[in-house]
Image (cartoon, rainbow, N blue to C red; front, side, top):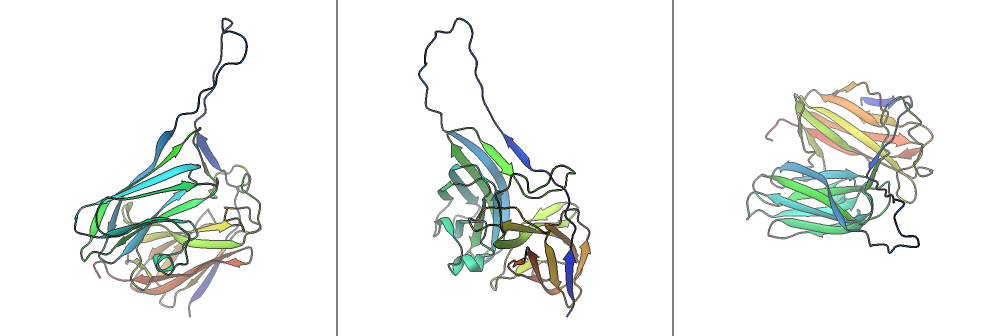
Length: 292
């Protein structure tokens, strides 16, 4: 068995925090004494508008990292009115659609059955959460469409992005909730089919992620504490690839939480990671020609 374990050195990274704030002032002519306060207005912010393509019987997902607290809504629209496409929202720990079907994921909202568009609404809480939106095509033909995700808040929108990213700045753990790490999850972050053309990750009926020769793929690791928050860690992760057929060529990465690979030819391989002695889920991957 061709088994590779990849250890990476920790790099200094920065956290991106963006948001809106408001302030007010008064002149000397303003009357003294307390002034009545008005209730904040509810404001809906669009977090993502993204397309999707999915084969018959396939499943894919879209992730929203660190949504602000509020009431989240999502709408899914596609082409053929007779096609049944189911729509789900789970927390970020759900590793795959078979796990969702088997009841092993925390489902925040679901919309199943005939009819379109599909809509989901639910509340979000926690500054370091991730929401996965799962799309399952029950039809006998491929479908494509658009997903929009928004959130309604009553205060300033602050969207934090504590996922480690190299920047040469402060320690990437600054600002994260404390550990220890109790959960680790890996997922496919992106699939480049060539020339910076990206497609959605997709699982087959057996739960294998489907890739094609010639694609460039990035896997991503997230770590969480017992409360389910992305948290501080001690040691950077190690990646393990079981690849008997030598399908993958591993590229270098300045971010230890990302595994970057080129897919050379057809076959089967598995990927897993470990951080602070906590093992992640195992991703099983089937590489086959396009159209199969």
